[in-house]
Image (cartoon, rainbow, N blue to C red; front, top):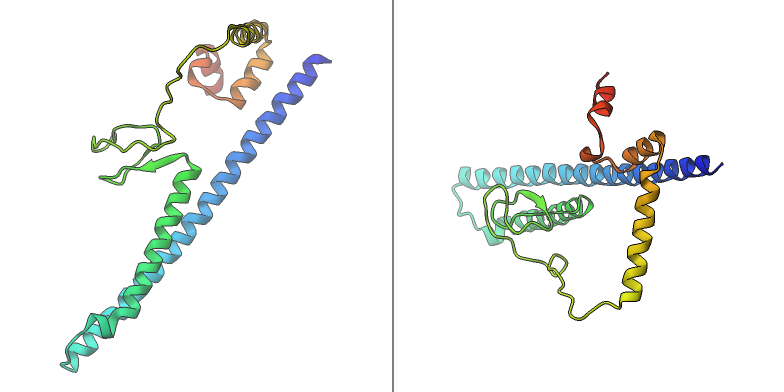
Length: 185
């Protein structure tokens, strides 16, 4: 009965992980669709600006950006800011950031961009915290004993439990060559 309980828990965990990832993907897709719509609207505004400029050219009139095109330029500015905010939301969903120099998408904890090599500013979140002082041994030793016990239990797992765990937390180093060959068949 204990085996089925563990299997049920693992299946529940796998479902939660999958549902969470699916939700993030759906939200990211919606954000990208909205960014695409805004970019299309910006192109329409560019077209309006071009028409106004050409009309002024045909009428041989002076073009004044502050008088004739200010409204369209402000629209573009607003839509560009909204696109930038949506892009930041997408990056947050993927737990990534943009390089400050080349704007490549990189991991949040990277100190240098893998694309251009530019040094990245450290956020408060990414700075490592230095612990000063000792941790009381009683709590620390209890935690170590608990971890050792959990490790011993994980060594006694059946193949089905290991497979379920791999599906929940896939990691290439946890998969043996035999299992990789079975997957390919």
